[in-house]
Amino acid sequence: MKPALVACGVLALLGACAPEGQEVSRGAAVPEYLGIETQLLEGDLVNFQVSMKGAGGRADVARFAECAAAQYTLIRGYGFARHLRTNVTEQGGIWRGDAIYTISPALPRGLKTIDAEVVAAHCAENGIPAV
Figure 1: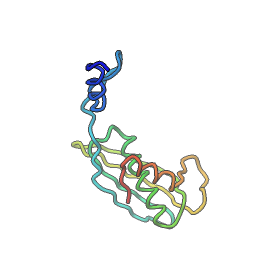
Figure 2: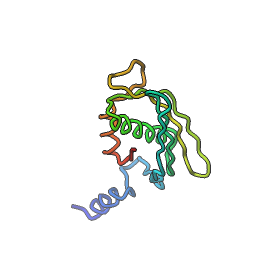
Figure 3: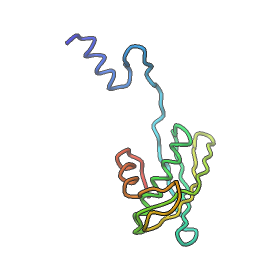
């Protein structure tokens, strides 16, 4: 094997080498999950307040809130949740999400439903913390 290929293989593992014609993403922030607060609003309606640094954008914050909702749903003995809304703000490098979900034992009506077990497993696999 050529030394240049070995070096490139090692550097690729470190994110410093890419196939010809492709750019390497450098300096991507590593997410730092700062906290989750939950509040049962009424019946099956739950508010999740999440905060993090290093988010790549609104979707990362929403995903963090979804992970919190999935785990909370399981803790409460339910299997499903339905997303109602998520508001995201960023100030001084701190991203905050304010999300509302309903939780239920059966698959709720609506388009933005989640299977809590599946989502919680996906979050654990990707290192996203939950409640």
